[in-house]
Image 1 (tube, rainbow, N blue to C red):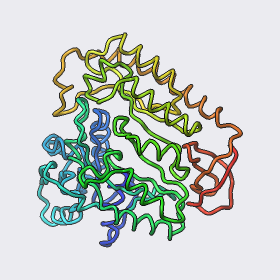
Image 2 (cartoon, rainbow, N blue to C red; image 1 turned 180 degrees about the vertical axis):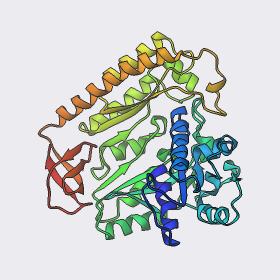
Image 3 (cartoon, rainbow, N blue to C red; image 1 turned 60 degrees about the horizontal axis):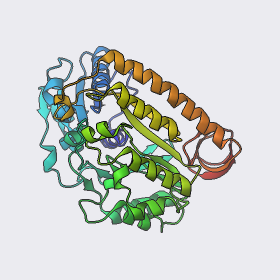
Length: 399
C-alpha cells in the first residue's frame, strides 16, 4: 500500500511538469514515504532521509507517510527534514512542496487521522508494479491489536465506492491486463463503513469479463466469514494465494495481542482453504519476542508453524510502537533471545519455501507474464522462463 501511495504522489508531480529521478541521483526535492510498522521501519526511513541530505545539502527534504503521521515532531527535530506531511495531508503533497520551495520555511502539516471519513485523496487510483495493476480499495483498520500502531497511522476503515472499483476493474480489463491485485490496510474489513463486505465486492467484480486472476492482499483470519470462505475456496478466478497473519502460535500470547482467535481456529480455517484448493500458497506473519513470551510460548509457535504447510513466513522481532498497549507491558524479552528465536524461524522459513516449490514441481498452473523472462504463478511462485507472450497476460505453465 505504501508503494501505491508513492506512485500516486509521483504521478501528481509528473503531471505538474516535474522530472522524477532515481533516489540516488541529485534532485531538488526528495520525498521519503516513511514506514513505522516496526522500529526497523523508522530506522530505514531516517536512513533514507540522511542519504538524501548527503546527496544534495541544498535540496528540500520531505518526510511523509506513517512515521510522519505518528511521530511528526521526532522527524521535524531532525536537522535534515524541511517538511513533515502526515497521511492526513498526503493528497496535498504537491501544493505543500511548492509552498515550501517558495517560502523555504520548516513546517509540520499533520491532522487528526481519526477524523477522516473517506478516501477522498486516494479513491481507486491504480498503482502498477511492472505489469500487475494494484487497486487500493480500502484504508484503515478497526482492530487495535496491542502491538500495532497502524490504526494510529492510517485511521479507521474507509472503503472506496464499489461502483467506482468495478469501473476501474473494467478499465484494467480494457487495457489488456488479466490479473488485478486488490489491496488495503486490512482488506477483509472492506465495506465495514458502507454496510457492505469484501464478499459482496468480489461477487460484483467477478462479473467483469477479461480478468483471469483476482489476487487478494492480507486477510484477517477472524474476518473470514462463511460466505467469503466458500467463495475463495470455490472460485478459480480468485488467486489461490492467501496471506493470513498468525503472529503467534501461543493462545496466551494471542489473547495478550487481542487478535480475536485461537491457534485452533487459525488451523481450522487454513485446513478449510487447503481442502478446497490444495495447491494454495498460504503465507503468514509471525512476531518474535512479544512481551512475556516464554520459551514455552515460543515452542507452541514453532510447533504450529512446522505443522501448517505455509508457503512462506514473514518474520518480525517485536518492537515497542507508540500508543500501543504492548509498549506499556512489562516482561520485555531480551534482544539476544529475540535474535536466537528469529534465527530458528528463519531456518524453518527457508525449508517451508523449498518444500512448497518442490510440491509444485511438474504442476500445471496459471501465471501472469511480468516481462520477457519472468512469470508469477497464481500461487505466488516466481518463475524464470522465456516467453513471447505480452506482459500482463495470464498463460498456463508447467513448473
